Image 1 (tube, helix red, strand yellow):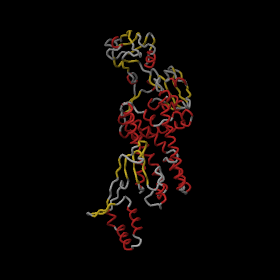
Image 2 (cartoon, rainbow, N blue to C red; image 1 turned 180 degrees about the vertical axis):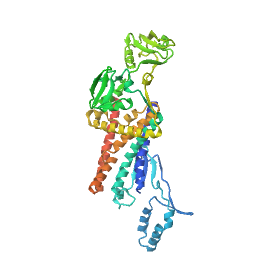
Image 3 (cartoon, rainbow, N blue to C red; image 1 turned 120 degrees about the vertical axis):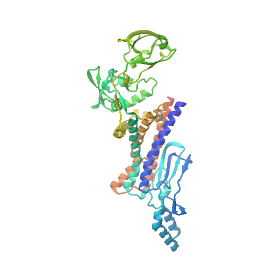
Image 4 (tube, rainbow, N blue to C red; image 1 turned 180 degrees about the horizontal axis):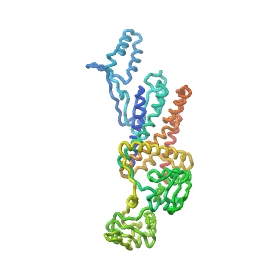
Length: 505
């Protein structure tokens, strides 16, 4: 239960951050162009909300203050209607609105006349822009004459920027997060050419031609040396070239749906390797008191060479060799480094537990064995690195999206459960921000798709208007919005339904 709460909390927090930034993009550009924003909500608020607040504004000075909205022209319109029969009142109203003194005293609020709140349904959020057909489907407002502070009254280029702003802010957020991560942690990795034992591959990777010990060289002709960037490039490539047995180069064709096979494998109980990992020696880092290794005299720092005469030069071979020895005694051959010039080589009988464990901790960091490369980024240098990482993630995500329309891709679609599962089981801020940045990229890409009800749908219609100089009718936009919302609801039900199906399976 604790694990579930930790993952759920991370998911909700990440969504809240992404929604705030996305909707603030719309809000900011709307207000810059003088468009009224009626509501700004984190999460949805059907029927009721958890919290709401609306700031107050005033006009006047020296004790003579009068509450007004953010858009004084609204008050003028109403007063003109009420004062048509009274010419003196109209003259007074004109004088009061045109006077230089009131212009100086008028307090213009960037945030005023907008209701801010938090909804109870954590599935997104929204920014209700006046005079726009959106998910609120406020058709009554659209029946009234257009007002100068409404979205529909603004030039097409301004409306286009307002709609693009949410996607733009999500992408900028991802860049900012990636830049912050590399500034705070830098990069440290073992280049492939320093991996003396090569790489170990998962079962699905071996099925398509990879062999344990292969060292990746190229993905579609692009040189590979940084594992932090290479995995996704290899998975999405059509051909990967590897160095085999230190002498031969071998080309491996990557099936289009390989990424889904890996995803399925990663979710299985038998998965031991996620695509590939470094092959490293077997070094003891911890010995549990009272277990088989401690009783046999194994010490921290020992390196295991073999089990029952079966050589275990790398960790992956060692772990697989333990299988089938449940509750048995095995001979462990190891090397122990001492103050002497030459290390001692020992063979020690060790009792294994019922699940083939001997009670040791093992070194898993390749940098403990091989030459590593460490890069520190200054604040200035972290920005182009963040841009590079954000652009690469966006490109990779866009490439993988085409596979969703395949049979295997449709099966792999997931909802909030699948998204929540990628967060770590214990709180790790670096991991959290990494995932949040990726989700921000994904949200940006999904929102710009030309589907009615998404930002991309509005952008599509606005581009049509810019090119043809003809605005689609409001009735057409209403129907398009309803169709788009219907499609999104069906997709949401399908994705979360697949999570439920996988849960029961």
